Length: 190
Image 1: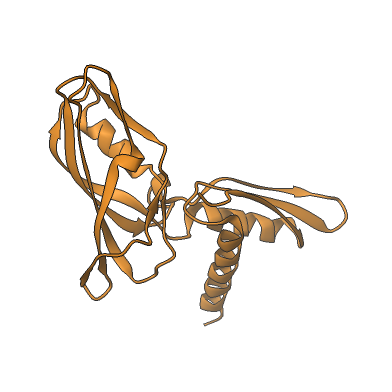
Image 2: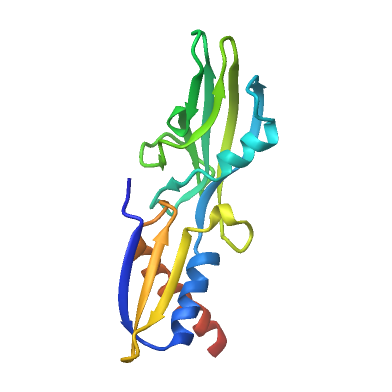
């Protein structure tokens, strides 16, 4: 998986640091599973809880042309042992790009070792999922940052501590937040 923590020293003030922190948490676009069509769920966890758990699995992509990402989760337990169902059991199907074209590509990564549910013998789980883009301001599942803070070093510099959920590298998140802040400031000048 990708690096998810970085400390960046910047010469700035607390207002700029806080603006960047807030943008990282709430305004940078990422992908998360939003729509879940449940065909079968024999597990002990109710459908709504499974759908919520799926939405919180980090999805990593750098492709800006994606509109939707389609996945399938289809697991059955035929053994006598309890079977753990992990995010690695979710299979990528295809993407829909910004031109509404259906494309099969292998550059979309899910965090692989997140447990979704457990299945007893003769239990199955079968569902189709669609991930879409969103921002943390709408729902926290789209927030790329799980812990961003800053500390005043008393010498005119600040330590910006960036921890991500695994959907983006911390340095990329920092750079995107700067670009986003510049865009917002340019709108104020118009």
